[in-house]
Each structure stands twice: as structure tokens, then as C-alpha cells.
Image (tube, rainbow, N blue to C red; front, side):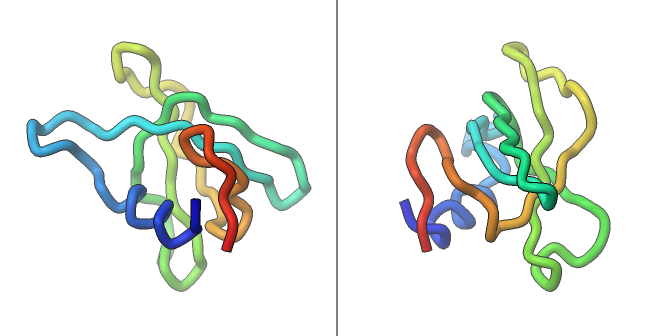
Length: 88
């Protein structure tokens, strides 16, 4: 899956029925640690997301209740999206 396809998917916040779009994502942190979020929804983060090349992910549980805090992830460090490898 190409990165620009992932970014298009992340821009879709909810279905036509009004339910949030849930996805899984794996990415590397600045320190090189692999982070896996099995269920998450897109959210905003502080700062200019396009300029800083980041997107926000809010982890959720099975009932779509928010757990933990929103996590910023660099679009250049996404390695897997919905079980598919991500490349340029």
C-alpha cells in the first residue's frame, strides 16, 4: 500500500452513517521503537499536521471508547496500515 493511499484513508474520519472509521497501524517512534495500535481512529494533534508531516491516532477499545491519549505519528515512519505493508 502506498503512503499517499494511507493518508487518504486517514483523512476519512467517519462513515456516511456517522460512525468513526477504525483502523490498525504500526509505526516507528523517533527513538526507533515499533508502536502498534490494533484499533484506532484519526484525530487532531497540536501544531500544523501538514507542515510537521504528522497525523494523530486515538486508540479505542471494542466499543469505540477512547483509551490512552492521542498519539502523534510521523507519516514517514508508518510501516503497516490495516495489516498491509506501507511503502513510498
